Image 1 (tube, rainbow, N blue to C red):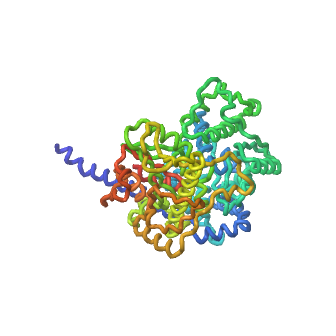
Image 2: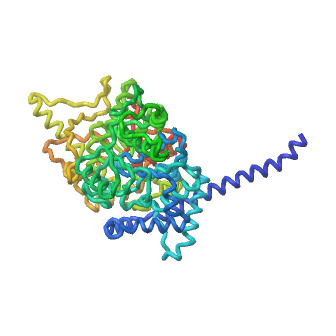
Image 3: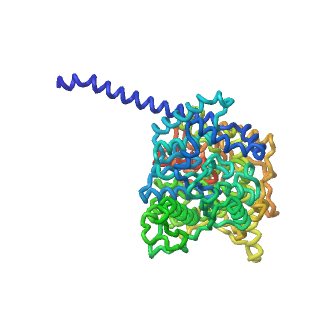
Length: 625
């Protein structure tokens, strides 16, 4: 007993020392994230960059080389990383994730730089499939930052912007960790992207292209293809996913101009699998294209890195003779926020960061399939809810139109802000976004909801009109039922008029129209109510603001609301079922129609923005709570 008593002070000192060290690490991480956020461009600067993109963009790569040199990184150092460089509009992150997983199964040590992060900024820097530790993130961040800070006076005070800094830091991390291969995902575009200071990648890839970031890259598919293929290098093999004809033509011309041997990937179903059942770790049909591109990138990288006398032709379809590692890499690949499901008690979250027309159509296909399969196993009412946001220069009507096929019962709109209470906003500085104002985010949510109502009513009118032509004697009531005949609320089934046309030169921008703009006074008052934590329902909107082409009167039967934060939207969407998003304020279920309250199961789709998906994962994801 006396020995135990004598040991207590020493034990207490050790515990105190451990707590002190942990606090020091925590403080260094918080300060690193806070300092990194100061490098974000504000909203006004972003607008200026967009206006001046053609006159200043060519300076980006020379500036990146200078930043790298100030940190002590040479272009020869970067070449030694054996880089796989991937651009694209849709699926480039998934392609990189598949590629990294495959090469790791072969025993190579991997570095993977991606963007954006979902929850924590350290997710952008992965070593052997895992984000670097918080301790390593703080260590490497301050190492890079202090070197740049110490040299900025000799360079007119120049410091890299947020993404440029992350790119320099990624190269620093990979060099220090002595990885075998660096998989680099392009941020925006390619030609002038910060990652394009790589002179000699081992292989390049272009995933599926579409219209996105048009304010910075141009508003036609040809202009976007020009930027994306700007990562090609002379003598470096390149692969492209299937593209629409105008985009493919530009990619071919750029490859020929640069001197890069270009090949179009083989479809996954055309590969000789030697009787094996190929499984993909990421759900969704579009992942087959991404996996096929990853296979070609991985095989080419392996063959290019081997001695030339041992090279084999990887262009054929008999790729799987002895490549069990390839199959394992595809099957074991995980990529959060893309076709992801989180199942809880009487509640399922479906998360997909789709933010282009093509990716949203794929998201709808995936959600309809998996949600219907789940509904078939549930006895009782199943309520479907969507939480949606879109940002930047994206046309919300283009994304919303496919979503109306899902026949949601409730629709929630919120900004990519985790918490409405400023005291809790600091819980995760990794999710801070200084590039847009809070007011503009809330105004955008109001526009998104207006657009939802406009598109939904227009398509409901089209369905009713079409039905009237098909059956003159009576007007059918189209209800939302699953295979067991259960009614998912009061929605009408919408008849769709999707066609398989490929994207035209103009991007088919006239296929969906933006709703009439809300009057500035009305929008200001609504935005203030949202910021003050007051939800806005559909009935509070003026009817004349809804522009419906069809003269028929339509009942608006999807209850929609705007919320000031992700947390508030989740509370309403889940009807308080998730204990991770329940606070002291009692949820008023009277805001939800009576026939939709307390269902047997709730299915919540979160889509439209990767940042929105990240905010939801931070709140409810099992890996973060």
